[in-house]
Image (cartoon, rainbow, N blue to C red; front, side, top):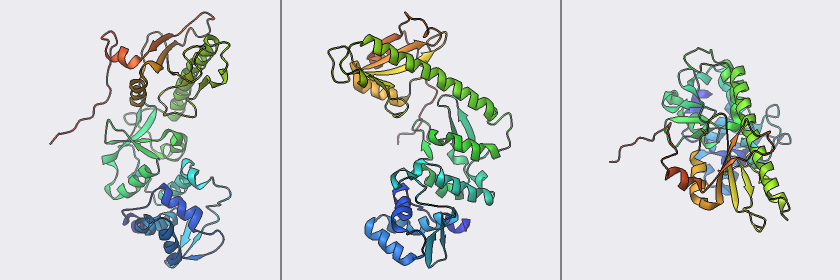
Length: 331
């Protein structure tokens, strides 16, 4: 069944696969593949090119049963009532759990992720796989995982595919735990890694909560204090952590704060997205540099930088080091 799956160049995308599962297939009964294909094509034209691959994929993952003429949902693997909505389905682990379980049964996970191609980035706190070291015949599944946002590209290093952070824990439990660890590859045990990540996350969060409290005190008496909020948990790609106001006269959010918590000396990482937002918002964007050792002091104030893009990139006092370079030939 795996070889039949890998013959397909197009296994669909999130919209197409979820449409088949949530709209085209009816629970508790077999349906003609011909009828299902016709229905899908009439509702979403693009499925015409991916339908056969999608059926093979879902059958391989044991989510459906297909015999060449009929297709039916496998109730032991997929209960529509227990799964989230079609739009949110691929933000959960269900499909990936089924897919990797089937790959494990055939001892094929190593063709995607193994000790030679899997690494960990301390800069982003993410696992990544070197794309060119994935077995070539599995590129179809690699491309599928990209379409489903299980993997995400790094624009600065084209060969690096990061495991999306929402799937980190699942990836550790499902993939990493099955690898034979060696000191010169991933080079640390998961217990230590998890502890380190949790400590870093808590350290950063403590700085953000301090900055939020600082803003609330600074704007005491503001009529719309409920709009001074920390957004970093829910909007991780916003490019800033806190939405606030410049002063008591502001009634539209006009101060957007990125918090960087440091220890001993001011060193921080500024992501590509954060830099882009800082450049766009100019004077509305602020960096709050918070000394983690002083946040318990009642009179401590963070170092605040307005329009940091201009002040940092045009000021030689700030030393900038790039950890990644995008290299290409301009023909």
